[in-house]
Length: 405
Image (cartoon, rainbow, N blue to C red; front, side, top):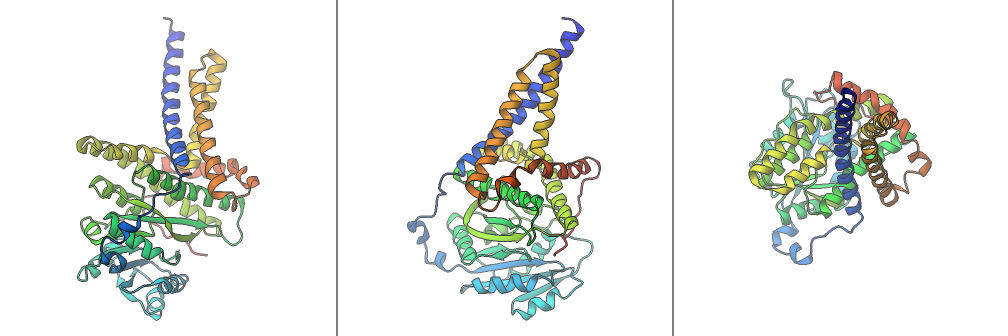
């Protein structure tokens, strides 16, 4: 074998491995999106009436708030309107320098204040709230962010599901476009829906755990009391869900309970928010995939291996960037050497990604994302490339609150 042939073979093997890895991730994404098309499995009436306690569990709703004076009144007023007997709200005014605590008290809810400039982050605020309610030991604890709107009956549905399953429960958490949307914000809301609704629904339909999304999360007290939530991680919700899966409390998805957030109108705020989400996702991917694999081997639990595969799927924009890069290099390699295997694998992976995106759009987003805006995805991806390059140079590691409109 000549040196040239050896180089060609080495490059072909490398590209084939890279393309095959991409194909596996694309296939997992496609399977999740197809599974999401099937009806979700709901609790039967028999399950709902297992115990009288299920009909009226004692629920504590924790609302962590850091300088949220502009939105806290709306959020709490909305929550209060959905309250049922045995449900109470506790707002944690966390390191606030504004009128968040005073405005929250005016709504009539319980407010506790925390000042600790060394331990920053929502995880520490939630831990403080859990310590405060430990003496009443509710049946279920629900976490709601201070900038979200909760649909009627969502708290009751989440609490009931947590009681019946004995597991953490994630609501259907979606993002609404700003009042003056542009194509970038529309596609961002769509990408958020693919991750939080389509893929979570698909995993649920396959009988697999979902990721926690940060708000609209319900936990049986025995579960949340058994794990440490105090953390400065910028995606503490994702970390919490994976930790719970590893110790045997895999989260379940509850699409009937809806919690709505809002994408920021301000471009810098939107960029800051996406940076925190996606840098956090990538950091968690690098940290937790090995943990999930090792735990799956030790515990002989196949669901942990599948969760690791699901976690390996990067944000949609980055997945497309990977595909374009591998496809471009494979095409050049084919033109030079006529070796086509890497190109064929990459092409099939690209088809799987495209079909998954089209399925998600046609079933779940056709009404709020016109096709002409969907076609502007390449512009959206170009906007995101600097964000991913920054991860390689200076990844964001500290929590930064998104500026509210």
